[in-house]
Length: 353
Ligand code: NAP
Ligand code: ZN
Image 1: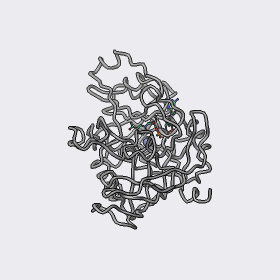
Image 2: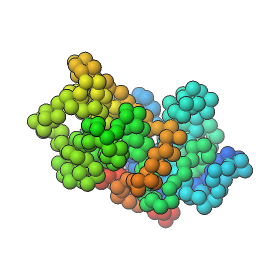
Image 3: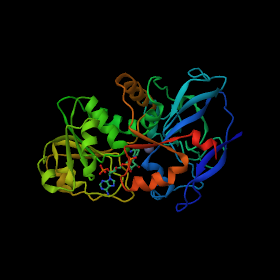
Image 4: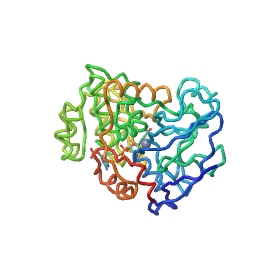
């Protein structure tokens, strides 16, 4: 074992602060990575504050962070895909059983024994639970390490590992292509990636935002139209017209207002994961045979496909790079929808702590 610096929270009401954590020495299949950038996902906020206590209670101390990009510093003897000096990335998962039907089909994210990057029981017993990317170094099985296109801005790449794949996967699954009318609800970290991908796939993209000041940015990011969702008249103009809507909202909101915008057989996929259940009117679904579904990140193979797609099309997240000392402030700003459009921590700032 070796020690590395990290930021952790001691309880649901404590701020994140500097600490030292232990990591395992790389075993034969492991890759050790120096983390250069780590994105700040709203899931980090939900987890640190134990807002998902009924589904995934938080074990403290928690070290969040699941959007990492960095450089390989050491590899185990059986590692074939990486060598020291390579760029490498890690997302929301660090292990799974590899044998269940979900893993075999490339859907590790649905494996019943999935190990999430943070707050999952640590199989290696280095700590009670896994510790995430708000840290200078991490050790991960090579099967859960991703290759990074080397011409992209690394701070903008880090958020692809969660915000990127979480939006890419459902847009692909639901056949978003040219000729489809697609809505993206919420222009935050996930939402702005959803807009970039839906635009790249050729769809007609409409952004729904509660923040009128994001209108111009939405158009620049690839939206064809922008609707301020608090304006009922503007919403009503789109009634019954969408093939697909991706809902990325992190807080409670009226899902029926969006279901009613779907055409026959249209679908809304939830990727946002608010703390409390949403109310769904049966009539919003019955009328038009509409459906409501969900999606959880994406499998490793699809994550690599997404990164390669981003390399080919020069897609990265729009980031506000922050030193780790500003992370508590960044959480407060996320709660006010004040991010353009992903905070990304420059991990060099942790070295001086
Ligand atoms: P974020 O950057 O904070 O963006 C969320 C956006 O939702 C805000 O920018 C805001 O957009 C909108 N919003 C916030 N509060 C709202 C309210 N009360 N009513 C209506 N709209 C509101 O968060 P994120 O990192 O993109 O994450 C979004 C959600 O996805 C979180 O719940 C997160 O945990 C979840 N998530 C799920 C997965 C998965 O695999 N399913 C993966 C990652 C994250 P506007 O200003 O444009 O209205
Ligand atoms: Zn995330």
